[in-house]
Length: 255
Image (tube, rainbow, N blue to C red; front, side):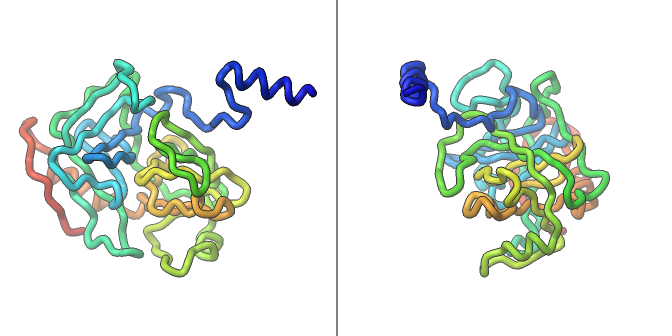
């Protein structure tokens, strides 16, 4: 009887006993960026006033793409957002699994840093097995369930050793030294957002490559191991950062 009464109260108040508790504290990830390219929306991370890092699958393909900074609820105008056009996209090429999956995205105008918009530091080291990290993005946190993006989600996930990750791979995937895995059987590791951001100790350590944890909750998800790409990222940003705010065409660059 008490359970029935509780369910009735929850129903009357519009709450749900299964309400998602994975929503980030609003604006607690000021480096998180929502990239919208037509109907597609996914994530990236702001690393300085001009540049974002995202996955190959999230890299914008049109000159009408918009990067939204300072977002939490992507369905509402919160007054904290900066919506900036994408000027240039430079994927790490060639992209061909299991080689590389990342892209640098340059903004048409520099971001304005404030309490809602701040960059995240590039990795000064590689993540270690067992290390506790955070993954954030917009999208479903329920395996095998689609969800329209709304509120930014956050999960705490452990970094998984390479062999454990390899053992979980389906037949169509192959291991790469450019991969790092996090999540798995002892953690809620499903966040279905291409380009979801993996942060460890205040450093950007990955962007989502394959959300294996959303196909099977026992599996870790795969992220680009950004500590392996520091030299490439710095070289691209040094050579492509504009001296003026004029936009340049979208392009690509070899590693």
